[in-house]
Length: 151
Image 1 (cartoon, helix red, strand yellow):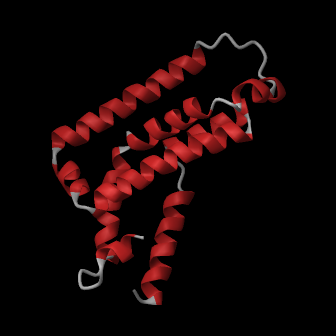
Image 2 (spheres, rainbow, N blue to C red):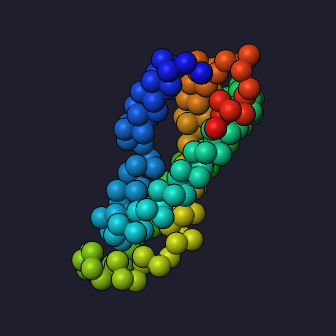
């Protein structure tokens, strides 16, 4: 791969990661309400989902999902229901004190819960599938080994 392609790819990824979406807002919320460690666990879950979506898009399954209205709508609605669930859970919380110190000590060790929250929000974002399906063909050279390009 030429250096120009790497630079263009880095710029595209920078724009992707800088644009706020549901995963970014979830990580910010976790950081404010539960502390830095909880936001890192949430971000790890989100990144794991993004790598999965990247892999699906790279292997061509993203094209199938983006062309299937049923699959796209299923992912979209599952994601919407999960985000509504998280919102209702936050609104109906019985928490009377929102001091970061009290929550950081009790919630930072809950890796699995934060990881799953980040993963679910990241995996249920159909826009990421469409984005990567549109992004990858611009940077893939079919003559060169595909595994190296994926890495």
